Length: 114
Image 1 (cartoon, rainbow, N blue to C red):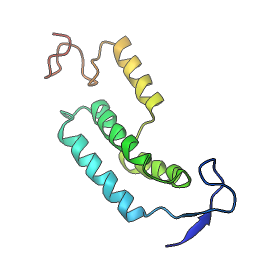
Image 2 (cartoon, rainbow, N blue to C red; image 1 turned 135 degrees about the vertical axis):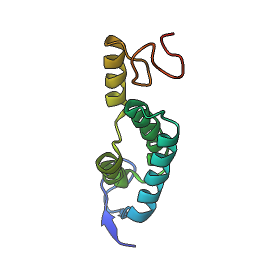
Image 3 (cartoon, rainbow, N blue to C red; image 1 turned 30 degrees about the vertical axis):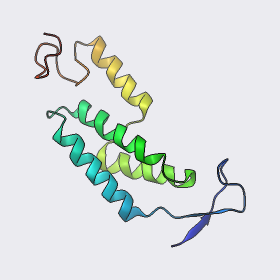
Image 4 (cartoon, rainbow, N blue to C red; image 1 turned 45 degrees about the horizontal axis):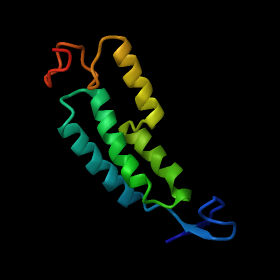
């Protein structure tokens, strides 16, 4: 497996960090996306919340020097959103009459706004 120099607080200068196993990461993302889609009720906002939360749990298991590349893949391929971006969406939804699932209040199949 190729290695690259990594200079982060968790990896001091001179310590090498192996390259991201992209195939393994793609498999993790694909599984997380499938699980998020299966429980999102066709709401994109809720899908993004579910998918991104799953990725957040996996990203912490990667070496710090691999995380940016992994998040870039998750963002470009599956719509990963940072916690701040997800909060911004939740705030917008709340201010504009949408529930936490991204569905107009009163129309959510879960009963939000009823």
